[in-house]
Amino acid sequence: MKIHTIPPDPDQQPTVPSPFGFYFDGRLTQPRFRCQACGQLIDNAHKAILLWNDEDPSIGRRIERRTERGFVFPVLVHKACRHPKIDKLYPLSMELQTALIYVLNNCGMTGEKLQQAREICGLLSEL
Image (tube, rainbow, N blue to C red; front, side):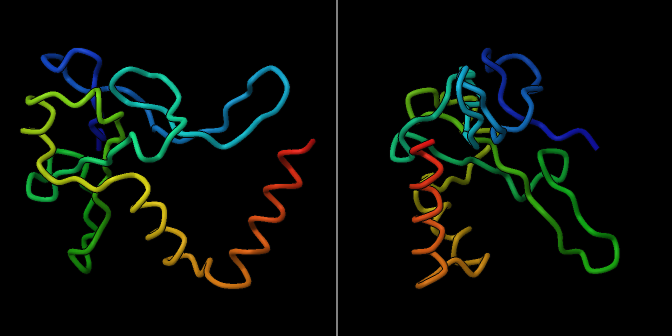
């Protein structure tokens, strides 16, 4: 199944790969997000938004046959890169900073575990 993402030109068929990856900046390799509309790195979660469509099965949806449950794959864009045609294709949205908190909670990263992860991240950033 082809997973649709946003192209730079809203009139083209979306084909941009996953917004998450490990980015090498010439010195370090770090997990980063990039905008699926302009291709630039997202350096501020408050300036990005996830968009999805859970009604149209041809747009970013993968259903597991046995349970009718499954994943809906969003696209990630800078808020400044939103376009009316994109919003029509992907009518649902969640700000990136909110989605990140959901992911942390859903993965059990709360309290002490979250604090330990922050400390490890701080140590890695000092390398």
